[in-house]
Amino acid sequence: MPKVVSIHSYRGGTGKSNFTANLASTIAALGNRVGVVDTDVPSPGIHNLFCLEPEQTTTTLNNYLWGDNPITDAAYDVSANIGLTGEGCLYLVPSSVKADDIARILKDGYDVKLMNDGFRALVKSLQLDYLFIDTHPGLSKETFLSIAISHILMLIVRPDKQDYQGTAVTIDVARQLKVRKMLLAINKAHSQLNPEALKQKVEETYHETVAGVFPLSEDIVQLASEGVFCVKYPEHPVSQEFRKVAQQIVEG
Amino acid sequence: MSGFGDLQSLASSITAVTSPFRNYLNDLYERYRSLDDGAVADYIPELALAKPEWFGICVITAEGQVFEVGNCDQLFTIQSISKAFVFGLALEDYGRESVNSKVNVEPTGEAFNAIVLDEATNRPCNPMVNAGAIATADLIKGANSTERLKRLLAMFKRYTGREHDINVPVFLSEKATGYRNRAMAYLMLNFGMVSDRIDETLDLYFQQCSILVNAKDLAMMAATLANGGVNPVTQERAIDERYVQDVISVMLTCGMYDASGEWCYRVGMPAKSGVGGGITAVVPGQLGIGTFSPPLDAKGNSVRGIKVCEDLSRDFGLHLFNAAKPDRNLAEWLAGGDGLNDW
Image (cartoon, rainbow over all chains, first blue to last red; front, side):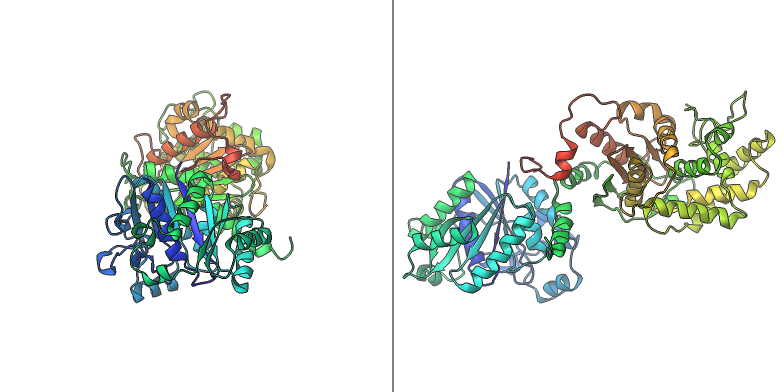
């Protein structure tokens, strides 16, 4: 049975897209067929990490939501772009970065039913094992939808007060939507913080499992937003931490 | 839970979209949207304007949960589906015995527009064939044609919870070309089975067939019958509870034109179809189903609508006489339990 994983954070700048790209690639590298949908229609960005240029993406999620194309027309095989070898493969459904397109979808909205039906069509026609949904920060229609259909909801939280508070709100909503499984990931932890103590504190606060703790990593920052770190540096401690999280997704 | 009201209602609107049952309906929609058998009715030009690709499926539970997929807001003319509901209003106006003395309730293998009356009693076979529907329309009370029409429209509003309009071009075309129905009415007048306000009654009959509805309306009408005659959303009573069984049983035996026997055997849901492409189907106590897809088979029933009802009946064990354990448990699929593999 295919698994749907939503990656969410209450606030922006938590490293959500980077996290999604790395986790999805790690799971694809295990030999799985993986899809990633960028539902962050107001501020799309994850296509950069998969080295997909806007000029190459003539059809996007927007076209599907407007009823122009089936969603599979907007799915791009990016396995080669990120240097994925072996059995696994990775497809990306990007959102449009054209200002006009963003304005149109914000102005007219879209039928949330279509988003749900599109996810399902994508999983079926590409025979995906995993579908990752990268969301816009905060709470919105697509956040609610992605939480409701997810088998696993991953919440990214930075160790600071604003994130802690926002995450509590998101967890309330997720429980209201009867989410099946929730995992937390702590990102951008300062080197002074003890990861084990941090993990324990966050788990006690929310009564949910922390799947991984990721340091504020200059290595990742240096790579900026080009390419997927885990595929390029599989032996780096950060990549190993991603494999740990991937393991919990696969088993969960 | 005070303070969570808005969150709760937003959450429930989202879970209605993502629920396993709606996903199941979406799979049916995807499975049959490419089915291009059948032909759109074209005996009057207005009906031929319907697009063959239009397709909507709506299911409403007796508790008022709504699940919709496809073109559920697209309006079309109700056509023969109106007959079942107008029969209910005639029963309210005159009671069972009096109505049955004018219209029999016997299924017929004849076509819906056959000019046939019972030899001994001169009654039309049942209220679902044209002759029977005209005799039924004749019974609708009201001081004049406007009042009678307004009573019909008010009744449909009680079933669906919204105002209905009439497609005037369809009404005028039906009226202009309805020679056969006119002949039928005069034959019944000859035997004293209808009153002599023939033109007024025929107008009412053509108007009732030209009422505009959508798939969601058809599901709500069926859900109202499934819920004992009370609209499950507005909680308004649409029909006297004593006559719900009359309407539903005639739908079961006569609702699908001369395919009613096979329908009862294969699908086992009381239903009524119309040449506009609609089907309304009742699962008593549980569900109302409304489907809309204009291409019809040779017997005048919507091809995709039949498929959808067949699958729903089989997969959830909704056949009236089903005794076997179905593949899917309806209550579980409506509630959306964790263990369901709806992918």
